[in-house]
Length: 520
Image (cartoon, rainbow, N blue to C red; front, side):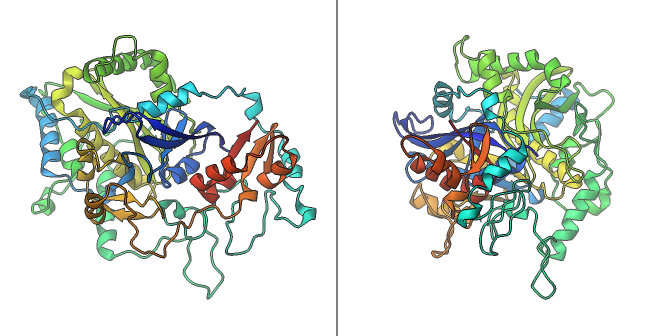
């Protein structure tokens, strides 16, 4: 597995906020991700990071004007609200009968504001000028010799095989082993089985209530009748419906699948298909539909966001919504379409009317952006696409049981128009200090009192994934991989320790030892 290579850009302070209108209120840290594994990005978003194209940024929560809390929905337990069902019924009625009153609806687009345009503008003004050759590490044996340079001085060996004390971060160069007791969902990575008599086997799932297990099995049985997730196939096809025992569901509330996978009449007025195509590296299906997809984006930006005709350029579209640092990965127990970055295309009667930009990660589907044809605004495509992405997450979970969350980006309580994400329940917010997930119901009273809040009410709790050993941060310098302790001795000129310390503190010990921090 190739290592991630990132170029830390530092903090950006005092730039415009699209939420509260403050001219100089936003504060964030950012880095260019030249390449990144899906596990790296999963761990980063579980620490409050988020990507826009290849630029990965993290709001400085206790300083920025509008704190942005990472939010996730527990997809397997999701229950559609009355308003959600109304949107699903409206789409079903439109497809079946072509009958929808085209009245203005209050749209709730999933991050369709390109929410951090100011951040991204900053990113592209400071775009990396590093050549690809400088980002390519030398052969492994050469890198190992450098990483072992400190062995004689008594420092910890940094090669591919390490022996460390049980209470320190154990991260091998070729494995995604988490920091012990990592509170975020990323902790469900590889654990070594314990010795006999030494406690529970952490390589096995924790015990769960029988009620939850029965509910999950029932859902998986229903979803197994859906179509596969092969590249370019019709996903969640509206002509496909679940074989269900209607009598057994008489007194149960309907779920998303009951509205989406239903048989349509032979004389249905429209045909809706949802296709997933890999956007990075671009698949043949993605390339074939690129121009049509771009035209939808251009119209969306001009009509919905009032952009001038020259602003939604192909270059902007490619950088924001097509480029991705995520490496395409496939795993035997993963989804058939693999992990990485995709476009989920909504085709109505052979024409693209909406595109959801998503990342498929080890534990979640992460929503990046949505754009749609303004002529179909009456279908509430922002809400509809979010519900379909939740259904898609549930579908992927059948093959990849760990993939059971739907990440919706940031929840911004201080901006009323951005609170709609909290309506997708059950959902959790990420504590900005300890990076543990907290049910949103417990967070809202705190946010009503203060726009910045620590959600973890255990005053003694700390960030378990925090930086502990700066010298173990992995650095790529002159095409050579080395620990920061070696790089620090070799470096000429003024010290950059403050910048490296800031970077490693924000990404955490695990990622700082697994990703390569480029130093010129």
